[in-house]
Structure formats: C-alpha cells, structure tokens
Image (cartoon, rainbow, N blue to C red; front, side, top):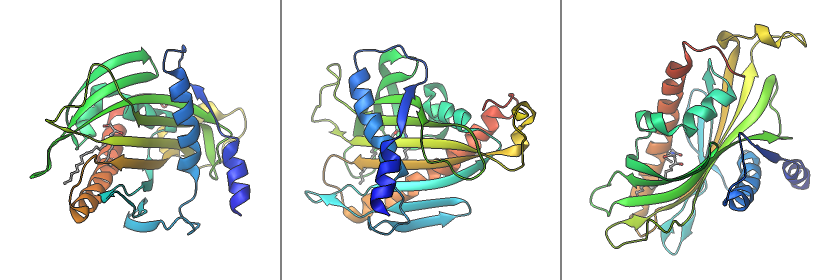
Amino acid sequence: AQPQIEAVLEDIVHKPYTGPEHKLTPLVNEHVGKYSKYVFEPVESGDGNWQLAHEDGDMKVYRRELEEDGVVVDPLKAQHIVKGLSAFEMCKYFFDKDTRLDWEGTVESFKVLDKLADDSVVFHQLHKRVWPSTQRETVFCSHICMLTNAPRPENMVGHTWMVCNFSMEHPSVPITSKMIRATLNVGLVCQTIINRQVEPGQESSITRDDVSCKIIYAANVNPGGWAPPSVVRTIAKREITKFLKKISSCAQKAVLEQPLTL
Ligand code: 6CM
C-alpha cells in the first residue's frame, strides 16, 4: 500500500492564507511542501517503527526512537479530537502569538524577529531551563496556510489547515555559548468533522455543537546538545501531552462566544 499513500500525499498543495510573497517564500514553500506530506504519513502502518507512547481519550501520542550522535531526536506524532471548534479556528489560535504564553509550557519568553506577512512570522524563543541542563533557545519561522488535496477523514467539512514551524538562522540572533540552540520542525494540521448530516447548500446552519476539530501534530525537535536520553524522552512525552490538553481547552474557551468560522 505504501506507493499508493505516497502518490496521494504527493498531490497535497499548500495555499498561502493571506500572502503576499516575501523574501522567505521559497524557504517556506520548501518546508511546508515537505512537512505537509510527512504529517499525513500514517503511523499505524507499522513500517516506520512508530510506537504508541500515550493514549488518553481521543488523544494518541506516537514516538519513533531515534538518536543522532548520541542526542535523542525522537520524532513525535499525535492525534487528537477537540469538540466545538473548527480547523481554521484551532490553527489560527496556535499561530497567534498573542495567546501563546497561555498554553505554551516550554517557553519562558519570545520576541518577533521578522513579520514577513500576516501568515509568516520569525520568532526567537527562550525555553524554560530544565535543571541542571543549559537553557535552550530556538529561532523559527511560523507559517499558517490551507492545504488542498489532503486526505479527508469521514464527515469532514471545509478545508484542511496547517501551521508549519521550522528552524532557521537569523542574523540578529547569533549562536552564543550562554545557551544551546535547539532546532525544530513542527506541523499542526487540522480538519473539521461534523456530527450530523448537512444537505448541500445548508452549511450556514452548522453550529459549534455540530463540529469537532481533528488534529494531527508532528514534531521533530533536536535539543541541540547532549542531555540524558531518558530525561529527554520523559520531558518530550510529558510536554506534548500537556501541550495538546492545554491548547485544546484554551482554544475552546477563546472561541466560545464567537460565531463559528469554518
Ligand atoms: O509546537 C509547540 N510550540 C510552538 C510554539 O512555541 C513551537 C515550539 C516547539 C518546541 C520546541 C522545543 C524546544 C526545546 C525545549 C527544551 C528541551 C530541553 C532538553 C533538555 C533536557 C534535559 O513549535 C508545542 C511544543 C510542545 C512540545 C513538544
């Protein structure tokens, strides 16, 4: 079945949310193009050595154990379903820097290095120090977009949305000896599921009670320097689980009083 899946994933195309093009458009296109396909590669097929690391209700977290030069770089993938909001609303919430510190447990502070467009922003983040290891920092571009031709789950309505975060270098933040530069490739892909039959043309009757957001989240993080493997694995599993729970409840609260945006 693998060649068939590859052919389906090859068709996925990303469309900018707002545009316009900017100096990093080619870099964004390259990363989003690759990562949008990677996120949809199934974990259940068993050929990638993915292991179910945690399950809690609708949330499933998978991990593939991997070390590079003795450093743990385990790829993580997770699925979750969140009631009462759309794919667009969840991706918008994840992308929005103004509410990031409400749900992001690994970050101490961050600043915007470059606002390239409304859909593409470069950040410098200082992560909370994990005692006794050296504090980590990241520099990454965050991009929100729509995906077309992505595989659609049953009962899906509307479009597939994605936020892609990927590490890059930035001249205003050189690497120093004070902190370790961690790197990341992250993708949050969301699709809206409807729990009742809607006749064509009746989409405006859909309410918050009718929808859930299906999340696929993938993260490839390199902590950037040696740290005890068991500690890194424990922290990674704890943080991804905390992140999914926290962003789900915060996003649900944030949209509660607002009209549903599919
Ligand atoms: O995707 C998430 N958050 C985004 C916005 O902040 C962004 C950030 C990714 C997190 C990258 C983690 C960097 C390294 C953290 C410190 C590692 C310490 C290791 C030392 C151990 C002794 O994409 C949610 C992130 C959820 C966590 C996976």
